[in-house]
Length: 553
Image 1 (cartoon, rainbow, N blue to C red):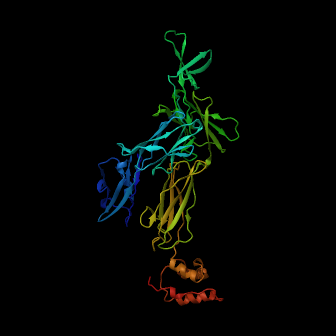
Image 2 (cartoon, rainbow, N blue to C red; image 1 turned 90 degrees about the vertical axis):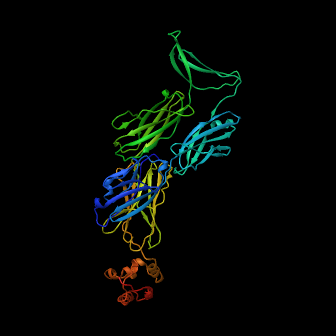
Image 3 (cartoon, rainbow, N blue to C red; image 1 turned 90 degrees about the horizontal axis):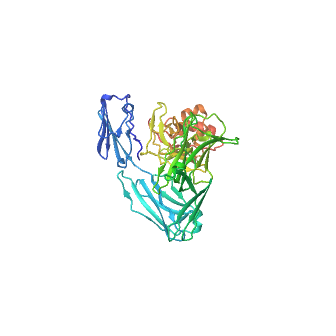
């Protein structure tokens, strides 16, 4: 949702090119006209458009910018090429992934405590929510009734009640969301924050002696807690020569692993991202990027240059009054080193005794790998077959896969969609141990007699990382007749051997064994038998003539 999309509508004319004087396009949504093209494009919604130049070449696809929930439904494409008119129906399903925010994680040891989370911006409404403690399911939770907002998406709030123990101080709590817009479950991990119970307020005193700063925490209830503090230097208005020390309690930042958000070719841009969250006082946060080649003892500090772009940090305040940001490193041209390079994101903050580092190895294997199409051994008329194309080494789940077929001889290509004899299952991504993804693009098709013989199928893979799509081809496919296959098996013959007829003779008789094509056998049946008998002096083969029927071509 919110992105641009294209609703396909392809057509062909018997005698290209298209004559604009005879041509018009009409698009309907839920039965109501939303756009038409008859020399000029007319639409009452600027979000809808078509490419008029492509329309005259057979592509009248509808472009929708900034897709909203309300754009989901049934679209009809109507092509008028006077005097004929053809229509096609396409259903658009809109989804929006949920955003997860932990809104409450404050706990008291041995006291009933409530953790809370907000899930917003998802569509459709069905969503599955779970709470965990170190992987163990927490069942004492509630989920509010979904609320619909102005954009048409939904939000819910959820809470879970726990009684924390001392052991929970070292445990990780998590929250899981499953939704049909996600390729897999989405988790949010967090530690608990603890507060102490006393009869009076706790006093914080930060004492400065020379250059040594210590923190004394005094509580009337007799509870002592040590926390780090950071010193701000200000001028005392009453005594300008003295300094006033302001105490700031630090919240330790959480630093996630580095990811490759934009996987682009080695010679183009690559964007590394490291998300940082749950910290206070954003002015005390500093991030430095380094690179270290294999074999080097020291890492090299990276500064903005023609090769490296380091955008400024943008701190965003969260509902719990902590901050989050994403540190980015953009590699804008080819690196000369042939060795793998390790990039390092070092995070420093006033609450940290030591910097936090995250590393990622960047190698030329960032290229997407698209394997050859797997075709099953035997294809038969009117029997469903499957083509598979495995794709791997993905850092993001934003592939576009298009299946096409190309006719033998004229080279004309046709884009395939899920309809009648063709079914294209949704792509399911699988996360690999190295953090990258793999998937398998599939095409299920049922060859119809006379239409799929010697057809070549193409799997075209597109990705933001690719300047041009990657294509894999099956080569021309040969479809067999299941009935002729059975005949050959009954006689002990392999269909591909065609009764071992020499190649010169196979030109005349091969179709009887390989394709199941029907042709006049009235005059050649005897000749086939005579030639076959010469090859089978030991009577290992028999030709059952009663399985063949005569027909005129």
